[in-house]
Image (cartoon, rainbow, N blue to C red; front, side):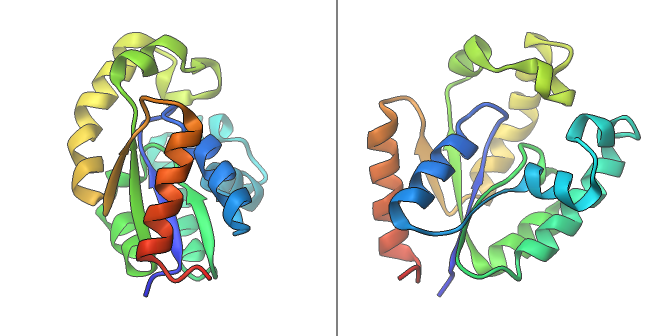
Length: 169
């Protein structure tokens, strides 16, 4: 049985916030993949993107391989982790993948684009990424959770899914 949960979804959908809350409640290690990559490379995500998106994606793939070896964990992935099939294949081996599906209107309303290299172009880029990735998220997910209500309810739903489907005790 799988012993990790990986959250996927658009930038700003709530992967890290929800992941931290779920991990605190279940007392399971939380790993933010972007932070993991920054620690691995001693560079920020924007600095890595200065060398091109593929340069960053190579480190993201390496992080997927390394994190697949982790014990029990809740992992918040980067929004583009689904762009490489190898990443999902690696993560699916040991992880239950949950797509945090936040409505586009809400993403457009409050995503802080200053910290997200791919979103520098603003609203149009968010819409484009959403259109490119939405179906990928759906196809990769073992479970889809809508982030369109009170966060406590979302956390409780995810906890139930985890306890019903994973070996986390």
